[in-house]
Image (cartoon, rainbow over all chains, first blue to last red; front, side):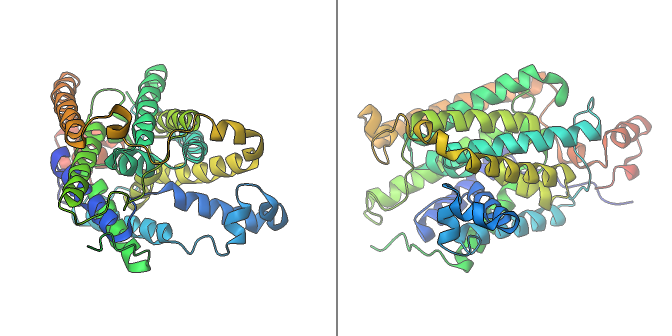
Length: 171
Length: 217
């Protein structure tokens, strides 16, 4: 019999540590934390593998390819760090759980479908917003940027609205 | 004084990332049920953790600047492009409610073994590519409603920074109180034991039979 997973930290404790990690990142690098910047660079690289000519000529991906090796960037090391840090935490606390996590009324198949569609919305939205929940919401918010708070208003409003329309998904 | 150090190297990225990932995982943000519980009002962790982190860091930056250890324009502050940033926030909120993650938390989901997080990440690459291919006709919208460069709330409202920070602390405190009340009313928040159970059937079975040995992490 294996031990049950250790409880999560209280939101106040986790938020305080997250805030200090973000502050340290500002002190070391001059900017905050992110995630979607890596996805952009990975997508540029993936498009280049499939269609090199068209990707080089693309108005959005072109500049990344022209600068050379889009994946060799601070954000790549940071995302690798997130994988390592999260894995260490989950492993140490017995919270690794290999599964398709879903609401009680949704099949694994449709959960996978919604994950793919939701991911596509988020990928597109992060490019429009010039960043994601980490880069614009969290890091922008911490600098008290107006942009960060406009983002957070849109994020929470749409989250509540869509969640209400699709109540079956998670409840 | 010479902060920040503007170090964009491998070690700097790995250090920031490890701390970021560890804190997100400890908050429970590798679980899409815990994350989306925010929008079903069963779990206010997203609001609580995010606002705590924003305020801890914002107050830290304020102190560093007030003490003269950091210059006024030393760190990156995003510029508002009203329509694109609002629409982007809306799409991310919608995609989060459907898919269960945002970009950063999907990485934590992958590290915690969630297969749906891997699929979500593939979806993000598809969505990002779609954006790049329709970028040119979207440029007008992408640039619309530009605000002053790197504008902050104190500048927008013409108030001292400490007043804005104080208002945000009060806002967060009210959110914490209301959130905890709503969580209790809906049987939340989600615990690690709940979201790490092998799957929902096994979870229910374990609860019915009182046998926790089937609820292996």
